[in-house]
Image (cartoon, rainbow, N blue to C red; front, top):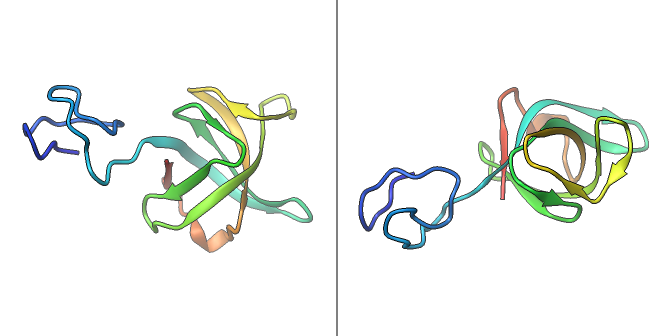
Length: 111
């Protein structure tokens, strides 16, 4: 995203790293989706890499469709539920209100 004040190119930030001005409409990348699927009785699950520290009950936005989804719970690689996801680790996220048609390969979830 390009800063409207100084013209600097910035990524993954809500403020310009050069002039400090707020970047309107900026989103921070939260999850890079690897695959999505439905578990009967458990809801809609998204497997992906957490690109920022996120928690249960955070609201994520699909940057392609602009649909919003709340995180019900997070499961780590050892199949244990956790409240927080650490950066650059793979997790499975249970999203409320999601369906299979909401996601495609390569979609990203942002905050």
